[in-house]
Length: 62
Image: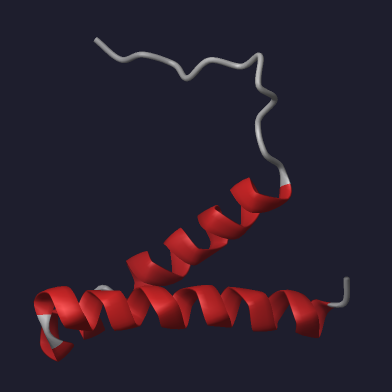
């Protein structure tokens, strides 16, 4: 996968999340969250590319 394709996928994920943020909190609040949304897009892409095995259990927190 080329860098431009990777960037396009991240952009699509981020745009989708931005639209959801605007619907939920409005344009002003969504614009404040752009950095968080971009990081979330990267996290979503990373998880989609490297799904945990079915044998893994999530960690629990106290």
